Image (cartoon, rainbow, N blue to C red; front, side, top):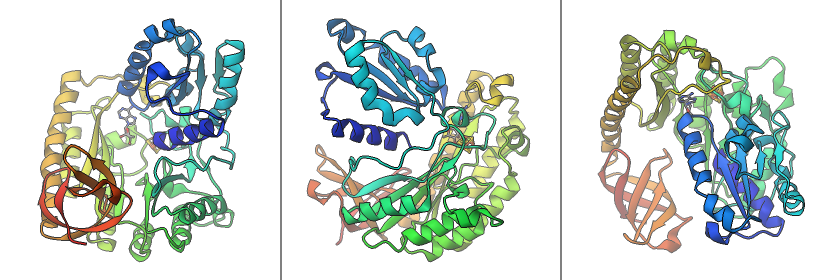
Length: 430
Ligand code: 5AD
Ligand code: SF4
């Protein structure tokens, strides 16, 4: 989502006559896009800004701006915390950035723009995309789930779905411009509410299913992905739709967060580990070769050894293809920031390491059956040093193989010759 926001603002600035500077010392404007989901990201942000002190001293006309979630979170407090910053712009105010920069260049007065946190983003946006063949398409903004550890509802506002007709128009336009893969973005895509008619009476998950059905018809688009699903709103209907809609890729990102029902309740997640396991079973029935990935938090307040073992067991049972595992950090004003952060740092670290090791072994085990199989890869990267290209399978697995840079954006068939936990290695056959 942050990637898409950066691209969006980059497009606005290019349309406004700016060009990419290439390096900090050549820039008139330096813009940080920030994340505040975990404390670590915020800490890095402040040290990155502080590193610009010498540059700003040399060039007092330099404009330093901060956009994104941390901008929203700190708002005017940023100016005390980091006096180098000229403007702060929350996610809802991004379209104002060109005007804010013009204002600062003229008046040299700091600007705080964080008032539109719950507004719908206007339906005009620049054509600019950083890729020419794969694109992120936002279908909803914000979130109203209020998981107790999560800052998103406060910094990105409540959930607002874009209207289906606008999303479809955007994807048709991308297809016309030659894009092949799209990834639909939302904090909880399963509660997508962009079809007015579906709002009455029918389950929330139907909105996403209908949207996927429509997008599946668009000529030129060959792969459709979506992120992120929420277990409380994901349904077997969605998994069947994934099976039946040929362009929808067989990858489900379904954050479990914990395997302990007590912790899930404290997290306000709205499901139990039993329901989670049942969902995975349903998914695997509908998409036998499909991959499933997750997010896990260790060291949530009051997490005991037993709670942690429940999470470990959940991971052992599900056998995820991949998992993002995080140490809990309090994120005021999220509700759990009021709970005692009582799992010691070392225990959090130990639990993190245990799960990372476990997941590494499982990821390898999940990749092994790919050996000697042929996978369709959309090539999206090139490594000059190794003369290798990289890309992803439909299931979202990274593949690496010999190839030329001009293959970027093409689909190829690759025979997988060896696998590691995080990548498949092979050779192009077609
Ligand atoms: N501490 C640690 N991890 C968090 N996440 C969200 N909030 C926190 C927090 N306070 C993780 C969740 C979420 C992912 C994007 O970040 O696992 O799914
Ligand atoms: Fe945060 Fe929960 Fe919303 Fe995800 S669903 S963005 S974790 S509040």
